[in-house]
Image 1 (cartoon, one colour):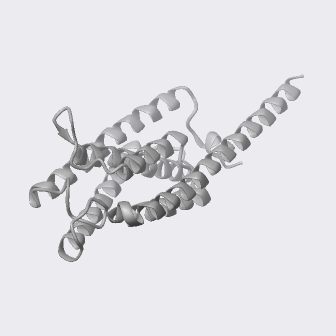
Image 2: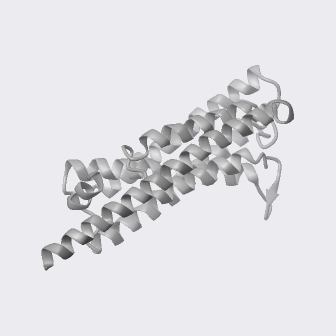
Image 3: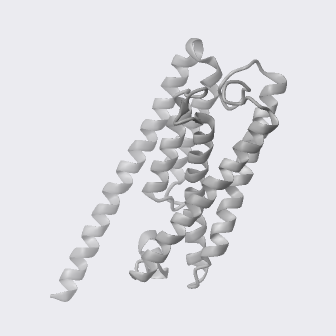
Length: 224
C-alpha cells in the first residue's frame, strides 16, 4: 500500500512538473513574439526602443530553451519579466514618491538578475557538494550583477558618444542626466539591489534547508 501511495505521489509530481514546464515555455514564447511585435510598432513611434524590445525578445527566446538548464525558479523568471516590462514602458523621466524611475529601474533589474544568477549558482553548488556555501553564492551572484550593470553603463557611454539622444539601452537621454553622478548612482542601485535579492534568497534557502527541502535528493528529483 505504501509503495502504491509513493508511486501515486511521484506520478502526481511528474504531472505537475509537466504542466509547470508547459506554462513557463508558453509564457517565454509569448514574450518572444510579444516583444517582436512591440518592436515592429516602435519603428515610427519609439525608434530609440527598437533595439531594447528586439533584445528582450531574444532574452525570452533564450530562457524558452535554457531556463531549465539554468535551474531558474518561477519567482526569478517573474522578477525578470517585471524588470524587462518596466524598462519597455518608457517611464524614464518620471518620478515616484520623489524617486526617479531610473533609480527604481536599476534596483529592480539588479534584484531580478541576482535572483537568476543565485538560482544557477545554488544548483551548481548542490550538484557538486552536500555542503551549501550560501555566503560564496551570495558574493558571486552580487558580483555578476554588478559586472553586468557596468556593461550597461558602457553601452550608455557608447550611445552618448555615437547615437542621437533617446531613452533605450543604447541611447543617452532622459533618466541619464548628471553624467558621472548618473553612472555612480546607477551602479550603487545595482549593488543595493543585488544585496537585497541575495539576502532574501539566502534566507529562503535557510528556510528550505531547515524544512528538509534543500539538498542533493531534491536536486536529483528536480533533474528528473
